[in-house]
Length: 225
Image: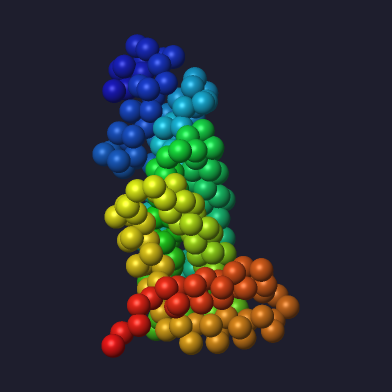
C-alpha cells in the first residue's frame, strides 16, 4: 500500500487505504495514520470518507489513552485534560463528514460510540460504585462526562430522525440501551443532578438538559407488572 502511494502520490483513495491499514491493522502511532488522511483530505477535501477516517484515527487514540491504567505519574484529571484536544479533533472530523454527507448516519454512529465508550472507560478508572456517582461529580471529570453525554443524546436524536422512515438500526437500539444504563436509578440520578444546580461552578445548561433526558427516558421505559 505504501508503494502505491509513492507510485501514485496524487490518488487520495490510496492514501485513505494506507491510513486505514496503519490505523486498524498495524495499529501504528496515530500520527502516522493521521498524516495519510490529512494528505487524502488535501487531495480530495469534499469526500466524507477521508474526514471520517481521520476521525477514527483520533477516536482510536482516545481509546488507547483511556485504556491505560493510571499510575503515580498522571491523575485522571490530567489525562482527561490532555486528551481533550484530540477528542475535539475527532468530533470535528465526524461533524465535517456529516456535513458532507447529511443523508448518512455513519459519522453520527461513530461519534456516539466514541462518547459512550469514553465514559465507560473513565468509569473504570475512577473509584465510584455506579455511573450516578460519576455523573454527579462536581469536578472537571463530572462536567466532562455530563457535557459529552448530553451531546450523545442530541446525536442519537439526529440518528433517529434520519431513520424515521425505516426501522431503527441495531446501533440506535444499542445506544438507547446503553444511555439508559448510564443514567441508572431515575430518582437518584435526578436528585443528584438537581443538587448540582445549586453550585455556581457547574455548567447549568448541560445539567438541565440531562435532567430533561432523564425524565424522557424514565417515561419512555415500559412499566413492569
